[in-house]
Length: 113
Image 1 (cartoon, rainbow, N blue to C red):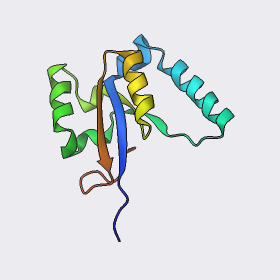
Image 2: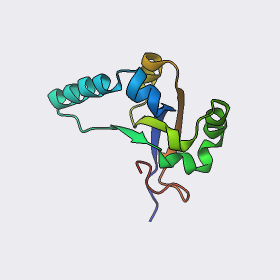
Image 3: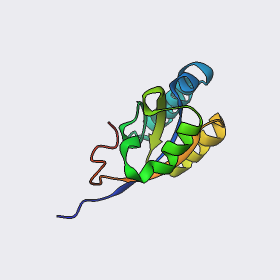
């Protein structure tokens, strides 16, 4: 049986940036309220030390993080299947790295881990 691949979009930055320097909680609260009003299922998540960085699909992103002296352990990501939301968050937060990947794959079975 063939697996259904989903494209995930994300922005990634230091955990400190998201949790201390920027109002990520406010953005998530407003987005969650909007989804509840519209009766939409949640399609965005906040991940600390995102496992998806282990994927070979993201070697370029890992290089960019390395140049910024960041590693998986001190990063967090906002991830969604809604590309427009991630583009908006990139514009909103500015100092982040944006990317995408598909899953599940052989090296990335659980993209939200």
